[in-house]
Image (cartoon, rainbow, N blue to C red):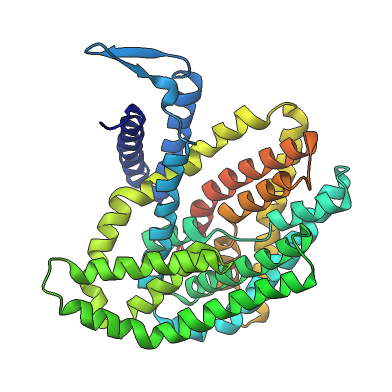
Length: 410
């Protein structure tokens, strides 16, 4: 017998898919990126769940339906959302040619450095001005460093500019600044000694050495063998297995799972036969998992309202400052270093804007600092609320800004 909670999750998914498709279509009709509609769907559904469903029940043929179970921040829904961002990065990797990433290697490295240094300094200054301790200010700076490339990747795909120099620089930089953010987090939270931090760096280096360079030689052979398996969609199944394994081992190596998914996409995308499965993978991703991810992002705002708004005015003021410097810090830091790397003015602006969104690593850093007792009391609520609001704001504004900067792209 399947538990009732399972069917509650099915209702969550059904509502998410219906709302995301309808509202995304409306945004598409007014010539705005569909991803914005999916985030708005999350805002609406999250609000309905909190404001109208809480504590209410009704019966279907004598069986009670508890509307308060429609929780878009539940572990089950979040799991599907996290699979969605993995699919999004996997598809982005499939669309990128390895030669393009290699060409923009220098630019990506410089942009990543600028995208870490400037937001980190801005965040620390903001923390000190709001009377946070020096350690707490470091955490605030770290929250602003790492880019979440999911929204940017989806928007670049929607705009059909994923294979440009600017896009390659953005995607490459996001990988690098995630790694820098993870290493800095290890130092800041005092998770271990200097030797422990070095060990984190070694694990990351091993991951890239083994799973990138070694993968270039092995994956083609595996895919060739899978093509000979006389079973329906065997090539697709093996490709998906490689993608999931890369995400798993990236996470276990201390690298974000989305980076593993992105690298798997790049490696599989180099195989000529991968063109046969691209549409099938997009069908799975865009048809199910990816809309759920963006609905979850939109619903995050309501989760922050419940748990963190104990002193609304002070939190709102701090959140506004954090949102402002999170946007300006990335545009200035990444844009300036992109210019130093030799990109044109418009390309530097595109890169800066593309690096604005924050999501999973920002939330990971804030929650890790709180769970380890690094930040406590009202300051913990203040930082968590500001992080959630920053995630929603930067996620929402980026598609508009990207569309404007790529407006004249041929």
